[in-house]
Length: 258
Ligand SMILES: NC(=O)c1ccc[n+]([C@@H]2O[C@H](COP(=O)([O-])OP(=O)(O)OC[C@H]3O[C@@H](n4cnc5c(N)ncnc54)[C@H](OP(=O)(O)O)[C@@H]3O)[C@@H](O)[C@H]2O)c1
Image (cartoon, rainbow, N blue to C red; front, side, top):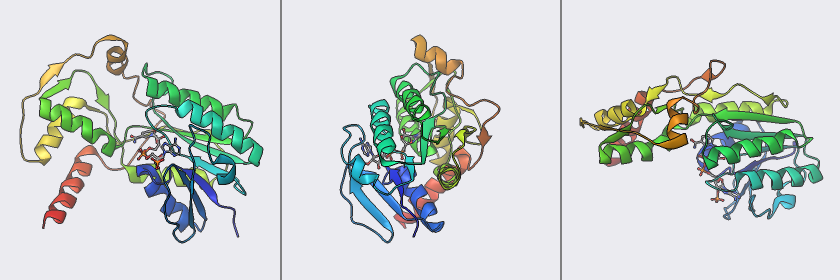
């Protein structure tokens, strides 16, 4: 019997797509999250908190590989530090981390925390793999919806949103493979202006709205306009486009209405 793979945050959006792929590869999975869940076939759930450092030793018992997906708006650096310390004590052999494209460039706390988490993994002394991923299509929806409702679009902001399936597939591949260090960033197939994403969103809903251009001030605006949130030419660009994602989303919504 193989040792279980610990997936922190395995109940989240990316985790829900990745765990079945690890199961399909015949691996047992243990999921760590803050809320209790009922166990499923070969999927064990344990309660813990990576930021508070709770339940980590128990979660890591008998584990050789950890896929660290748990994350939120705050505390990703502290969570990584806690997890690395516990993984070292538990004799873990491979740490896999999801990070975000532009982690070391964007002057935004979320990105800084991700860069700090990367440093924790790289300095852990445990063989590691880090994948930086662009914003998911799903993640962009609330922002695009809000901009559409306000009829504004920040000028010069570009995104390269990516589908969750392709992210999950790459994470599963890396988790099942050997430690690879920092691998090529993963982004969606196209880079698009935010105004373009909003227009496509409106069009998918059968409407056209005039968008007022908006200027994001300060260092954050400058970083976005400089494209510091975007992957470079070495990135892998894959998966569904924004238009395909929206078409699928509308089809699912229409299905559930019928
Ligand atoms: N979504 C994106 O566009 C994107 C892009 C690049 C990178 N990422 C990174 O990818 C990771 C997963 O993203 P996602 O979209 O799947 O997020 P998500 O849907 O919000 O899921 C987060 C998961 O982490 C768990 N979690 C949160 N805080 C925790 C804590 N302190 N201790 C233990 N578990 C905790 C949550 O479960 P409970 O709430 O039950 O604890 C949940 O399972 C995050 O680290 C995120 O920063 C996301």
